[in-house]
Amino acid sequence: MLFGAGASLLALSALSPLVGLVNALVISKPRATVCNGNAALCSRNYANVTYIGAHDSYSIDTNPLDLASNQEIDITAQLDMGVRMLQSQAHLSGSTLELCHTSCLLYDGGSLESYLSTVKSWLDTNPNEVVTLLITNGDAISIPDFWVPAFTNADIIKYTFVPPASASGKTGWPTLGDMIDAGTRLVVFMDANSNTTAAPYILPEFNFVWETPFDVTDNTFPCKVDRGTSSSMLLINHFLDTDVLGTGIDIPARSQAGTTNSQTSILADANGCTSLNGGLAPTFVLLDFVDQGQAIATGNFLNGLS
Image 1 (cartoon, rainbow, N blue to C red):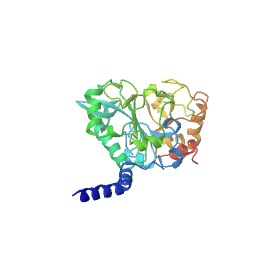
Image 2: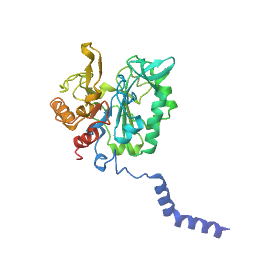
Image 3: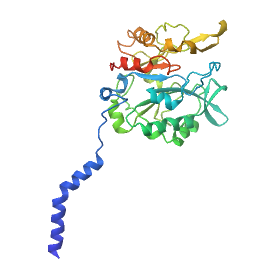
Image 4: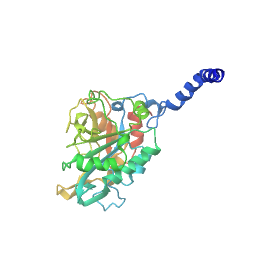
């Protein structure tokens, strides 16, 4: 009997290094070696990368007579082409948060929950990508009553990143590689009326970001601080509007999108802001009609990848 027990203990003792090795293989996770499409980005902190963004990303129509649309390709196609910031705005339609352009009567892009589910599905199948959402909540819609249920039902909260309390502006952010390794690959900003007690993963934008003016009709995009403070990450609103027959009503300048989104125009805007941004490239470049022009190639250039 003792012999049998002793033999079992000896056998386990002999196998224990192998057991430890197997456990290590099961528990450990390979570190990310490609981040947002390039190995060079894995070691850069989140604030030190330029992300191309889609303004009113949900507002999609290829019909040039649809004056309320800002994009011509859907969310999945935007992400597939390399867009890594999706901007949206939401309003209540009955009891549902809908992605609407100022008014749901003007343009209704569907429910926030459906939109988030689309992003979640894309993150599921693209495990080495970090994505940012920028959401407008101008109606001060309750975070716990409406926003949290939408995020919960879309099963996307598990991907969200909550920065440490010490983080502010450009400081305190992890590298893209660290975010990917941790599985927290979705950064969510809200321009106003956030509630970090109810939803710590919905970050108050202007604690971390500053913006240039939006709804610009001057194609030289003069740079100034419109919202936030210049010690933060820079978002340039590089989408051009046109005034309809001098009425003061601005609509997206769709016919000029190829020029607006050219490398020449984007770089001129970025360079015009360097003195306010500590000599650095913008963190976010927000565009209409992202599939036109040279958006992704210019983002690569700003990241020093081409």
